[in-house]
Every structure is written in C-alpha cells, then in structure tokens.
Length: 252
Image 1: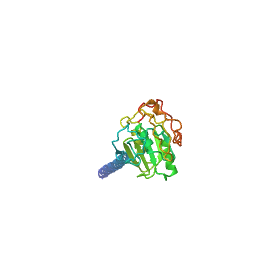
Image 2: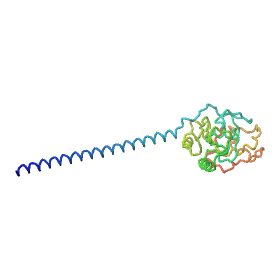
Image 3: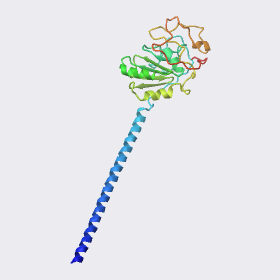
Image 4: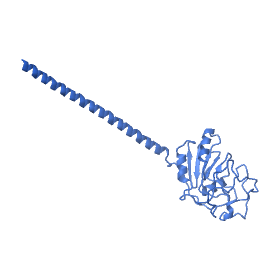
C-alpha cells in the first residue's frame, strides 16, 4: 500500500514538473513573441520615419532651367518665371541681405549668377514665418525679399534652379540652401562677390545706361556710391559680412 502511495506521489510530481515546464515554455514563447512584435514595430516606425523624413526633405520638386550667364542689359527684362531663376540681367548685382521691399529682378538674377540663393515670400506671410526666413537669410550669399504673385507662400531660387515651398517651416528649404548656395557646379560666376553691388529696391528705377561700366573689369565690382537713380547701396537690413576675397573681374 505504501509502495502504491509512493508511486502515486512520484507520478504526481512528474506531472507537476511537466506542467510547470509547459507553462515556462508558454511564458517564454509569449515573451519572445511580445519582444519580437515590439522589435518589428520599432523597426517599422524607424523605417517609416526615415522614409518620411527623406520624402519631406527630397528636392525632387526642384525645377531646372538652362540659362546661360554673362548676358547683361540696362533694359527691363520680361522673365518667363516669377521670380526669375536666370537669364539676362542688369550690370549691377544686388547686395545680398534682407529686404523689406521687393527688389528688381534684374539685380537679383545677377546675384544668383554669383552663387546667391534668393528667398522670396508672399507679402502677407505671417510675421512668425518671416522671422524664420530672416534667420535663414542672415548668412552670406543670401537674398530675402517680398514678391507679388508667387505660386506658393515661399519660393527659393538659385541660378537655373527653383523650388516652390509650403512655407517657412518647409524642411526642404535648408536642404536647398545647403545644396545650391555657392555650388561651383551650378554657379556661372563662382567666386564673385555678393556685396559692393547695389541696394536699389523696386520702388526706385533701374540705373541708367552707363557705357563706362564693364562687368568684366575689377572696377565694376563697386558702382558709384550714389547712383544717379537716387538708390542707396545698402539693403533695408544690413547684408551679412562681406567675403574675404574681392570680387572676380567677371561680375556677370
């Protein structure tokens, strides 16, 4: 009788141990399953973030043009794009900086030829957004000015390239600036200055024809201190620090 009880206890212990092992296996599988699911979710979220971030910062929407440099004119130019991203331009380039009034396209295009990036914005852009643009435009070789009739709240232009943006917070804006500002591949007059030009705004007339001005001469980098138009040589906000090297003889 005692033997039967002892055998029963042993069998009961075996069953209990087997059941415990089954529970442990189920718990382990459950935990591994939860862990694997968490890993899959995390990998998916990271992948989505990376893809979404790249998509938001993609410059695939940049429009490209094929304008040649070194075309100067004293006349008003009818550009195909608003704002323009290349083409014939005035003999004087626009001093890089921040302008509270529209500037002449003909001067702005000349600055693009020197490697500047020109940010234009709708005049009704909220002040908070404008402050963000001013912060971005505070570095060298940057132009900022209001512009009527833009296809979007903000448009950023460089020589032969242009991108319509959703606003000042558009993540593509700093990416665009980094890629195109003073990029020797896209800049016809790489190394030329973006200061010592002219600070005329669009409410002032274009400078009159001056046969003595030679955009390919060293002296042309500095127009007269007071052009006969009555324009000043400084923008509405002081331009950023001048580059250390003098402008190249080619000021086109």
